[in-house]
Amino acid sequence: MQFDDRAEAGRVLAAALQAYRGRGDVIVLALPRGGVPVGFEVARSLGAPLDVFVVRKLGVPGYAELAMGAIASGGIRVLNEDVVAALGPKAQEAIELVANAELAELHSREKRYRGERPPPDLRGRCVIIVDDGLATGATMRAAVRAIRQRKPSAIVVAVPVAAESSCLEMREEADVVICAMTPDPFYGVGQFYRHFPQTSDDEVRELLQRAAETTPRDNPRSDRH
Image (cartoon, rainbow, N blue to C red; front, side):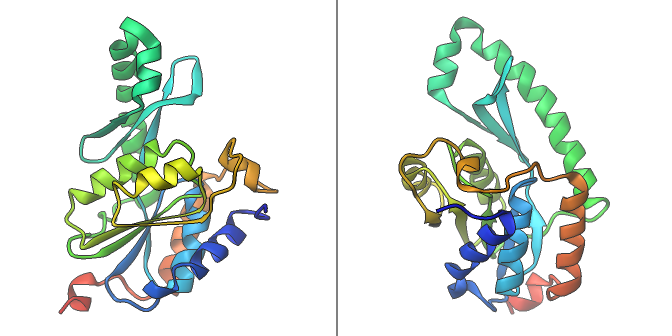
């Protein structure tokens, strides 16, 4: 099976998340950029607010698509130990060099997508973290660990497609894991989309704005009392 695009994948994923529909404590956090079109469809279906949670992959110098790990807000760093070991004695130097650059980009993107709007209060909330797929799971693990620091009541990881091994491993991190498809063989997320272009910053901002206009005002404190 292939999804036509990320919007269709989001609608399929939303169908698997209907138990969370209409709950006042739910918030959908999408991992930009590719997770945002998926998260938009999920949030719209569930009647939940949508926001972004920025995580940055740490790519091997010269081989950016190969992930050494990932970083997220709150000083969270997750490393792919197999890749790090293969880099040999210069691994730590490479990690620090890439991590410093990606941390600057993380802060830049948070500003770009959110402007002056503060991050949402996640304390006591059910947080559904959405991406367009799960390959190694490094970025999602970083997101889960960073969000856990903010004291949510539960963390749900939800993706349209995932490597089965990554889906199983994620259950050690999140309270609930929903992978709509776990096909075998799995070579990469883009394999399961007919149309898989890069999501632009403008598209991210547009979808966040549309979500803000069409979902209930995010007021979690009143919802919880």
